[in-house]
Length: 76
Ligand SMILES: [Zn+2]
Image 1 (cartoon, protein in one colour):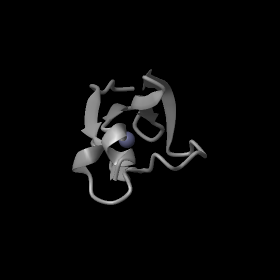
Image 2 (cartoon, helix red, strand yellow):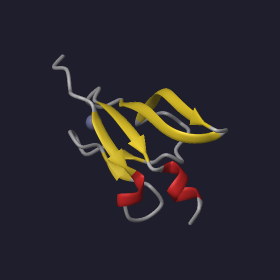
Image 3 (cartoon, protein in one colour):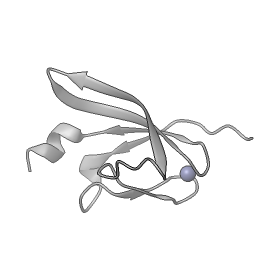
Image 4 (tube, protein in one colour):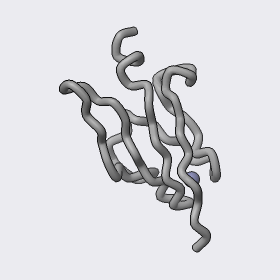
């Protein structure tokens, strides 16, 4: 399978509740979706007891996507 480069998505630049489409295949990915049907979480980065970032992998195209901007999201 073709490998995919790592995408970075800043949640503060996304409208709505943090849902976004996979940059490669367009699969709908929601951080609130815990079923892991669309994606699986590879790594969660914590800073000062707060979620700082998540690296996840799209199940449809195997792209790795790094999410940032969680703290700004929580303060809204
Ligand atoms: Zn994808």
